[in-house]
Length: 471
Image (cartoon, rainbow, N blue to C red; front, side, top):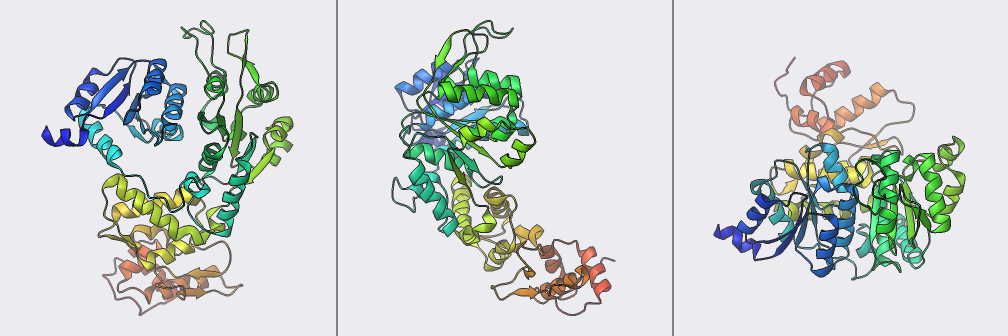
């Protein structure tokens, strides 16, 4: 296959599967790549220490600790080596776990060349995003986009905190980018040449979490056929990041506190002490003070973790960053999908700016990507954000009219107006801005039949041209 060999160009790919993966190795070779096969985590880590492959393909069957280890080691390379997780069951949870462990992509079974090669080609041919900030700057390292006062305060705090080997508690709503900040603290800090190892406490039960953290000795339980290092040992010299720390059960909290105080622990089933030297970062979207009062979180661990506290602002507090975020998401979408999206329409941007984005940057990114997929041309229009139409911003009574082409397109609703009056005003303003009622219904997030029902209820006429009344 001559065209495949052009893009493969003899680049090495590390394939890590317990069974060896002969069929996938042949498919990689057929694409002009040079596969190197490892069957264990230890073998793969040794190979990564000796050479820098173009990508790492790791089977989910190796387990979350092995995947986290390989992702961390691959991320040390400049530039970082992308890791693709080869799924076992193909479930949504598997894909979520892979992304949380830092994988660049997840491939659901069946695992064959036909499904793997196009994804791998896009991954390897993706050019790095140009940095808007000088190389090595805080903004470049965090991946945080924007220039609002709120985000500048975060960047300044990262620059100051990262100079020290200290515990940091990162607080913020879901989707604000807490792990990005944790990675930036590590990347700028004195431990940056060692591993950054993340773990999500919400995805693992108590026994599994302890086994992943502390590892186990051979014979510690039925399936423990050999000694296994845990994440504390893996992160020795570097940084261990606990995401969703509030979800950790009290018994494990006590063991974590002991490690933080003594810098030592015992593997599961072991008697000897293992010494470690690492920094611990933790993040949560929960109110830890409430958890303390309810007895769900240990007070001594809380104060041990919050030597420094860094609060990440929600997107609604830095809306001026939204246009820059959208540009970054469109550029990323184009790189991953060979897309041709050039931008977003002024009407769609106005609608986006009026939304409060409770899911924060993550929700905005998903919405922009969905709209890019649905775009009929090179510009993302209102049709991609129909479900945002007519929603109120939580800050007051001025609601952007869905589809307004400029910021003067607002509906002023006086305090004390009834919901029916507010609905009538918003529908009337939207009807004046669209050629057909079908378009107005889509922007308002209503079905056409529902819109006609409301028109009769509010005795509204004129505005958008009549479509066929579905009633």
